[in-house]
Image (cartoon, one colour):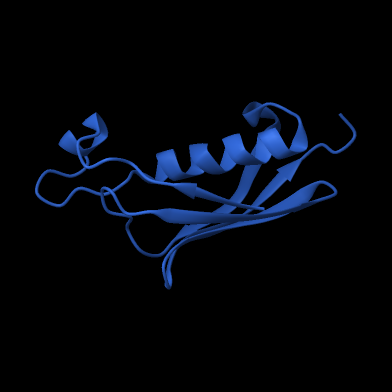
Length: 98
């Protein structure tokens, strides 16, 4: 599954993260990952655990990011990119029996 994410340059989060060189906070990217995964899995975001997350390149205001999710069994991976640049990658886990 592939989804897209973009925060407008005038979003209030950029006022404090970071003045002079704003970037999308990593927590917002992880929230996006959890929301998309939970919709696909039919559960709540709280039922999914981020097992591992690595951030490589900041995402700037108004840049469009692409999320690729691969979910299977009780484990999955996510990959966030902006064009050819790797933004973040990680592993998710959940209870497949719940």
